[in-house]
Image (cartoon, rainbow, N blue to C red; front, side, top):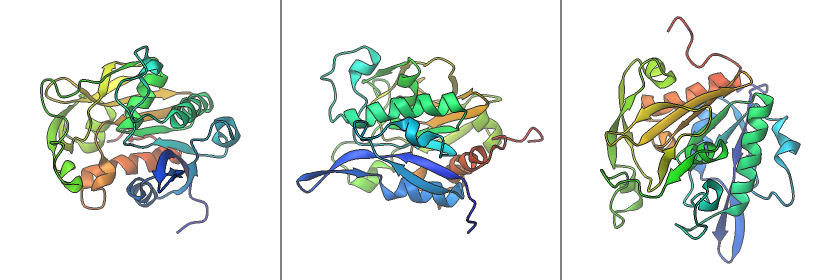
Length: 250
């Protein structure tokens, strides 16, 4: 293990631990990123009243916005504020500042599930709270936790896109654990993958020479056993080192 690996900032959620709120990130996100992107990691608290993203973004080589049980507040994309709790206002505020900071300084920005939705909203896009109207994007509510990630479907990869070139394929089979999704694409984002019902499943972009890449599925769930899932974090590792996500020769 090198002592000069790039440093990834991973946003925290506000979660209840016993009777107290806590800053937390589920281990599977951190372990998958550190192992398969071969990086160090620092957790960024969702406490915007006590710190600003500007204080830390210059010390990070990139940012990962993870999935979460909470949903982006609808008011951030122009809808009523009461829909679909739980919400995490601290994370929303820190996320917006991290996105702006990463894009402004040309730092790689990656997202998973809620992270994809956050990037889209931060760039002016809108979400739908009706994912699954045409096909199921989430397992039935009464299944066991692990069984949620057994719910899978195919996604079509955009020809010539980052994911299609990285995987050498035009389709992937992915897990699907979400009730919300992209309704209107944020500025500067391109569609990387779609579900059979047309739901956007991955996006990409760039800002100041740094890549943006986010997926709606959960590659962290099976990254150790699934080469396609590990590939997402390998792309992150390349981005953190300033390397092209997909070499031109590929």
